[in-house]
Image (cartoon, rainbow over all chains, first blue to last red; front, side):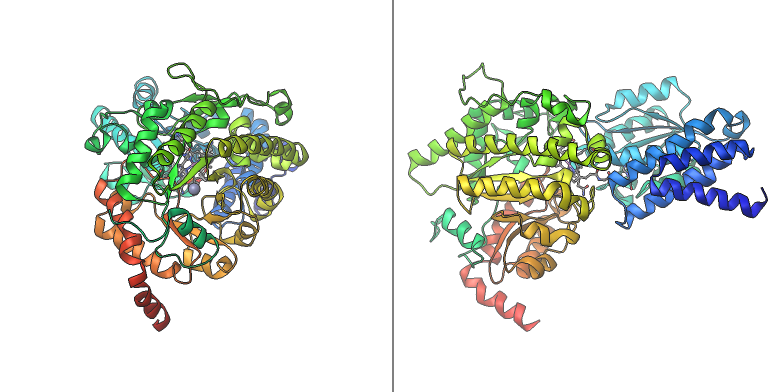
Amino acid sequence: MDNEELNEFYEKMAQAVVDGNEDECIRLANLGIEEQIDAYDIIIKGCAHGMTIVSDLYEKREMFVPEILLSARAMSGAVDILKPYIKTDDIKETGCVCIGVVLGDIHDIGKNLVKLLLETAGLRVIDLGRDVPTEDFIETVEKEKVDIVALSALMTTSMMEMKETVKELNEKYPNVKTMVGGAPVSKEFADKIGADSYADNASEAIRVVQGLLG
Amino acid sequence: MAKDEISHAERIKAAIDLKEPDRVPVLYPGSWAINFAGNNLNFIGKKEKDVSFSEWINNPDIFVKSQVKGCDRFNYDFVMGLGYSILPGALGCAENEPYWGIPSAVKTPIIKVDDWKKIDFPDMKDDFVKGKTTGKIQIQLEILRNISNVFEKRGSDAPFITGFITGPLTLAGFLLGVDKLMLSMIDSPDETKELINFCTDVTIEYMKKQFDAGADHIFTPDPTASGDLISAKFYKEFAYPAAQKQSRAVSNYKDKYAHHYHICGNTSDRWDLLESIGSSFISLDSVIDLKKAKDKIGKTKAIAGNLNPSGALLFGTETEVEKEGKEIIENVAPNGGYLLWTGCDWALDYPLKNVEMFYTLPKKIWSISNLKYIRFKVHSI
Ligand code: B12
Ligand SMILES: [Zn+2]
């Protein structure tokens, strides 16, 4: 395939993701392998690009959560096929994010979206789920090589928990970066509680993470 | 406190009938009411509390006392019965009850969408034995009975006693998990509608019990039908018919003043649907412009709202609360059909001063003596 054909191929994959068309995603993934296109490139330039479009369409209220989850499922269909073909030196550059919804909060739809996009962007993501106490974040940072801890909060009560978690992480692991988000969380709040960064939505989270990893 | 000229019920009914009452009716302080429990008012902003959240919601005595104390202090027009995941628990969701926070469902009882057929219709017996009963249905019904007894005994003007049922989609989300519910709307719409219908039927039976126990009114929030989760198209297909069925059942069983419907988030693309659900009024979230909502549907439907529950009330000063509330009231209260509230449930940690300000708003800004002033202002813009 020449460059133009390649780009067209990535576009098609992205579109299949946006459409939530799992069959098409799988077909394209198999075709890509057959044509010996780099599996990592297909994921990043095709699938992840598609998910970024999805996230932007959500912000514009043109797609909603059911459609997003459909896209995510379609994308997984492709990623499952492509994963075994990824060359190991492709992933060594990327970092590791530990993500979770803070204690007392079970709103995990937004967190799941952020996780999804980070994963498709090639990062290793450790998902601690929802209603996660500070100790669990600390324990994970202790055990794993975590670069960034990403915290989500959707309620004002849990924003207070977020503050505690960030404080403790900053004290114990000043080298590990923190990123916070969730509907009521703002840039000002992030600054106030001493978090290293804030992102308003899932596609921005990718950019922020890439910035943090330098 | 000076006696009002008309009763709480008359004031509420006037607003629902799209008239201008003597002052704007105002709702209860949601979950913040826990600060009236025991000695909690002295513990605002502190980590330790006199009464924990789980003590509050599991002890009718403590709960009822706190609600009555709140009414006595602020004289709001509605009083709240228990409003926390009553039916999810009764249908088999495992729950976690934090020391200071809203309980959360930690385990869903069903795996596949049509597994609801295996769930037993909950036991809605209304017996309550102090120190023994742990079922939330029984606790809730005891609370409603006791609140209505308190006001009956006093022979004083009672606020609208408000029961609670989870909205149909939200209940379905508790049973199946929200992610699965969202996908099943696409994968198997018919089965999903059956699940939602089952949830609706359970809520309807439970609603009747609450009216029998003394409720005047039912609050049905459906956050999972929120404008931030599903499109207007899906709302119309999945949430709307269920909400309509629920609402019709409420007004048939009680009356046309008995139903407060709420969904969260940006709902501006579905106000026409909300208008025709059949509820007495709808409350809208703080992310939308209430004036626009009033212009669009206010001729036929009373609306409530919409101070930001995580804005000035939580982080701001009294002056900021006053400013935010004043603007909303001045924009939306003229010509009636308006009730004052926040855009959603209250956080537990608002400073007392901000809450005090919230409850002086209706008296300060919207009273008969101020009416002319506001009319003049509105018309001269
Ligand atoms: C769906 C929902 C629920 C569902 C949650 C299902 C689930 N599994 O998540 C259910 C019905 C279970 C629920 C329960 C409750 N809810 Co609710 N819920 C919502 C609702 C309507 C939507 C949230 C959502 O999923 N949005 C869609 C996602 C995609 O958006 P998002 O989460 O904001 O995520 C985006 C960004 O914020 C960002 N992001 C998110 N996380 C992170 C993390 C990082 C690191 C970064 C960088 C970015 C990022 O990226 C995402 C994509 O762009 C909101 C209203 C609202 N408008 O937010 C209320 C809301 C969050 N709920 C609220 C309340 C009060 C409750 C309850 C307490 C209700 C009750 N009284 O029982 C319980 C809470 C139980 C508990 N302990 O947690 C309030 C909180 C109010 C407050 N001031 O604290 C809200 C805000 C409603 C309101 N308007 O007031 N709820
Ligand atoms: Zn809400």
